[in-house]
Structure formats: structure tokens, C-alpha cells
Length: 353
Image (tube, rainbow, N blue to C red):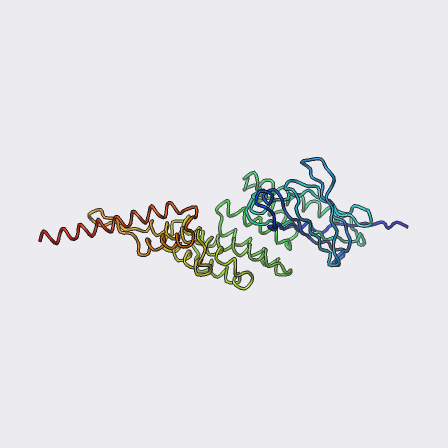
């Protein structure tokens, strides 16, 4: 006898995208989808997850959940998909999602973006009303994402605010709202949203998302001129993912550069290099920032900030054929010539005495 499933939906779908061992040209066109399915809080085994590409005809891509309710599907061509969950041949969940290649911006940012998880509930206790509530939540969230992509940040913020009010436990919604506030240059509100995202996330174990939220919050704090708090925000990254700490400091430094705080940026770039001495981009940006801190004497002589020449030389040591190698060599030559000219002028003055 065939089972009849009745569900209402509490949340959405978790998507993460990981780099695969593919050639670069193939990697740029493929993504990995991972997620989890639960029923009444318990993992669902052997649920079928189906992906139908809305941009091209072809056979649907399928995968199954394991005993922990998790699923993953590699080598999915990037694009927009109708994703559905099937249990005992019955479709119990459906949504439209985007699959992005690693490093792409098709979800509005270079980092992994996630959507709410697939959490199914049986219909006992009035499932229909809860299903309608979920549909409204998902509608607001998707509308916010679409508006964000169109750079209509004011309306996107309103949509995310409505979604967050409907379900404050969805950390992803708070994070998207934080991203939106940052685009609007409302940095204090952005920080508040990221804190809400971290609070909601504390009920789960998701180190990758925590690192991403802390990094974004630190950037917003730096943009708001709160350097001490920005550094404090990324301290836990050293425990969660030490290999990403250098990038977190780099983002703080970039925020200081954008707000004209060169001395603070130099400090942050140096912290980035302490975390990863081979971070070539941090080394180059340190050199560029030091150039901006040069002083000019009364007679018009430009005096570079201490360590400027060494910063460019160190960049060439790290990346002798890097993308900034030519600029670094040009600056080193210019500084060397300036030193010779200054020395010669000083010697000439001594001779004339």
C-alpha cells in the first residue's frame, strides 16, 4: 500500500559551493550542491533530490540523502534550477535556486551564499497554515535576493526585514540583510544584522558560515571607524579556520583604505601578512598604502614612508611573476633613482662649502 505524505514546510534549502578537482575552464562552469533534509527534526534517509535546469532542456539530475539526511551533487552546470525533494515517489518540497561556480557572483557576492534548510514537518497540528506561512517567508526572502541582485538595496532591505521578522532563527536572512545594509553604507545596522545572524547560527554547527559572517561584520565595523571592534570580531576565526584569518585582516585593511585611514590600513595589512607571510596581494597593497603616506618637504621633495621600498621588494620575493610585478619593479627603480639623486645633491652641497 502506497504511503501518503503530508507536510508543511518550515524552512528552505542549504546550498554550499566547493572547488572541485577539475581543469580551470571546466571548474568555472560547474558547482557543487550540498544540503540536508529532516522530517520532524530527524534526518530523512534515501530522499531523492532532483535538479531540473530551467535554462536548458535535458534529463533531470538526481541524488539521494544518506543516513544523516545529507546529500551532495558534484559537477552541476551553473544556472537556475527547479529543485524538488521526493519521498516514496511523492514530491514533498520544491523551490527554484541558483547554482554558482566557485568564486562567481551570481548570488550577489563572491562568497558562498546559503538558503534556509529543508526542514519538513508532518501535517499534524494544522500543517496547512504553517505551509502558507513558509510560502510567505520564502517569497519575501527570494524577493529580497532578486532586488539585491538588481541593486535595489532599499527595497531588498525591506523584504529581508519582513522575512527576518517572520522567522528570526534563519541566520541566512540576517546575513543577507547585513550585506544589504553594507551596500547602503548603513554600517551600524549591518553590524547589528551580522550579530543577529551569529546569534541564530549559535544554535547550529556551521563554522564556514560563522567565518563568513564574522569577516563581513569586521569589514562593516572597520568602515564605521571601529578598528578595535573589527579586530575583536575576527579573533575566533583563528580557532575556526586559521587559514582564512589573513583574508579577514585583508578585508579590514581594505575597509580602512576606502575610508581614507592609511595608517590603520597599514597595521591591518601587516596583521594579514603575519597570519600568512605569502599573501602577495596583502604585501602589494601594503606597499601602495605606504606610498600614499609619503611626506613632502618645504622644498618640494617627496619623502616615502619608512618601509615603502622594502614592501615592494618583499612583494617581488613572494611573487616575482605576479600580476603587480611590473609596477613593483617600476616603483623600486624610481625609489632607487631618487636615492641616488638625493645623495648626489647632498654631495654637491658639501663640495661647494
